[in-house]
Image (cartoon, rainbow, N blue to C red; front, side, top):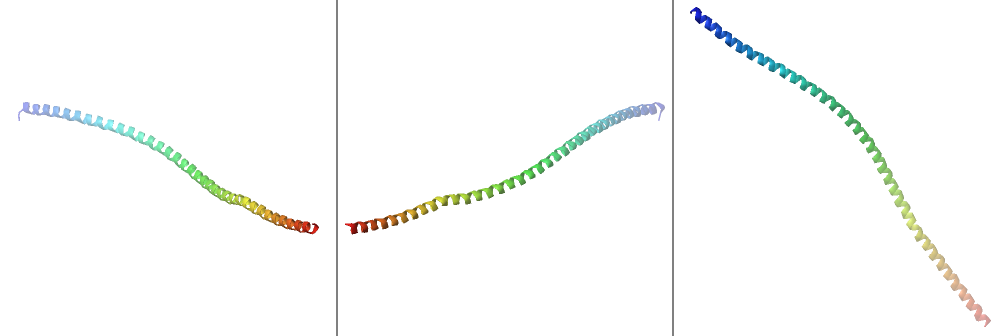
Length: 131
């Protein structure tokens, strides 16, 4: 090979090497940008996880409050059921009072009717003797 050919080959290799070097630099810049983006995404994920933890804590607290409310509602339901049973029982007693009162009045009227009939009979007897 002649010196000119060797020089041409060197120049060609230098051009190729520069292109490869340029491409490697572009790839390196891309890797750096991707790394920065990945770091940004990681930070975003970390913030999101923190927020999710806060939401989870709040949801747990709400769940506990709901459980307490459920217990209270159960107690209220139980109290209302007891109250309703008691009211039904007392209402039945109140409804029975007029029946008892009317029965007592009826018994007294019947007794008075018998007394009046007996007195009317006695009056008749007395009037029949005096006439």
